[in-house]
Image (cartoon, rainbow, N blue to C red):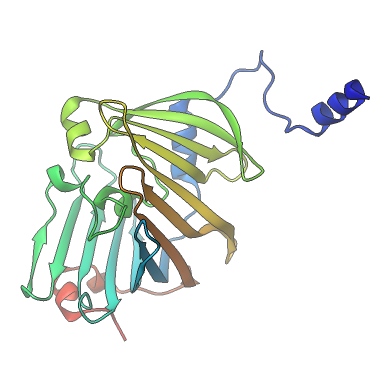
Length: 267
């Protein structure tokens, strides 16, 4: 009977690649992730939960806008609630040219001015969350400029077959900017969306995890409607939930400017 149970288990196991079947390269997988349809534009409402180790929670509401201009991607994010963070905003220009550093500007209403986020700060925590400025900019995209990629195997994540790829910063300067020394990501082998990522410090200490959940088609585009990040050193967690997602929204180019940061989110 034990042999019969083993046979049933083997038949029911995921049909992963055979040992003699070559796996796609890490760079190939990263390129497939970046080629995935994210829509030409999108508007979303975010609910952000900041969860302490003891379970106490603070909640924030945000509104975001993203639009492609050819190969360039621009996004702007506005905090709407509670009052102590209302009006805070982040503007991002993600350039296609690998030789041109991306730009981010953070607007703080108490100072009534915006400041550019330096490259050296892109690995810092974004306004008390467990996501970095770089995480917020990239969302589900993977950087071919900052990392070298390799495939390390296959795994099942929440019942989904995934390629496992590992990224190492291209040099020490980039590692310092990003704030970590290694990332291992599980990418859904069918829809090419990252489902789970682990980060390590430069010395090998586990740093944080990011998990994408509630993945479903919204207006025919595969979308993660929840993202969870956990700081493994402190036990602090951040949960993002997305609703009112509209990939057909018309967003004016003027929305992506420092002047728009001062005006706030459109009505």
